[in-house]
Image (cartoon, rainbow, N blue to C red; front, side, top):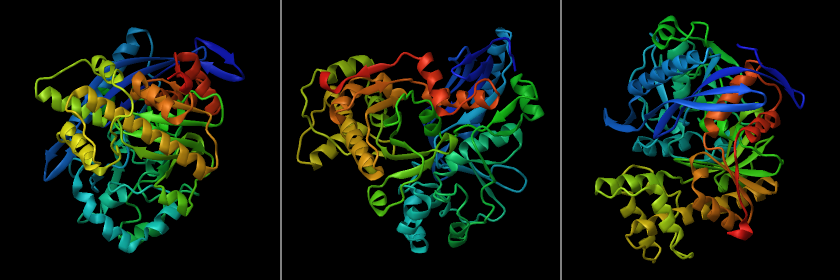
Length: 488
């Protein structure tokens, strides 16, 4: 690691360092170089690539082979870009979406392309799992909100797990890079098989469901080293063989929350992208029956925090509408769509953006209009009206979720932070401020990659301190927009 630049920022030591963040969402991925210097982080995207599900082998699956090829292409671009600046990549961190996994046999081979959570196969397994593990018992131990695609329901559809290990998607990528199998803790907390109070595997649940106790590899925490690159990977990417893969908040929301630029304790966050993850940062899980009834989840965060949140529908609704309109030859700029939607009067129809009917890819505009009709209202077919309906519905969902979180956790909220792609959507930010009655601070856009980089940098000694210190770097590095509820 280069230590050419060294300074002290409020007691925290910062040294120059270059870190590669592999940041993959359900619709796209990127490899980003993060440079830490003088208490700030500079981010440079070196490779972007599409991601998505394909109909294959009887279900919706990820084209993982293509995905991993893109990761290697991105790491090669990172090595080349860093070298062009006379630098060397210090380490690599990986974050992706949650719950999905690949199965690896005793020979170390991936048995099939991983299923997508959008596949319907797990729906039939829910009743079978609940016959063996009562939902109240599940929640009291794991604190995980019920979603039909949670990992334990997916695993319950597998015909035979003997001799296999399940690696969550970022862990699977890490395994192919290093040859080392581990399960990163923040993503493990989305499986429904991790004990929330202790942060250890709930072994009794494995037994009850007939899963092998070693189905998942041992846990690893954010900031711990997974391993160095395999020789073949180093040769293919041009990275030094000593380059280490470091565990970060591998659930992308965990990395995003680590990069929330909060200054005060009482904040809510919205990680807004394909999904919206809306909640609070706590020190202890909330495992009450009222919390279960409200379908809140308690997932692990960086530094042992708890991400107390609920999934709310996200900008998947908008992107799927755009895809449908493009198929019909209508391809407006997103800015023009949002301007037209903003010009419409308030008080239009709304939908439940969390409805499972919106999970699978299909004709989204028709499904949204059908959902409005089911409420007794009418939604015009014009794209601007549909966009306004989506954003009004999301903002209302955010407001309900934050109010519920305040009540259930007994923690008031003074400000709402929106990070991720949705932070660029000024209309969504304004509507959220109006719906919550609280100021909204928007940014950074690349929060997941930034949180990924900051955890790597701290592990390498390029900065020191807790989450407050990490967030100070975020505030020093990015312009943030503020939306006041009273001025909407």
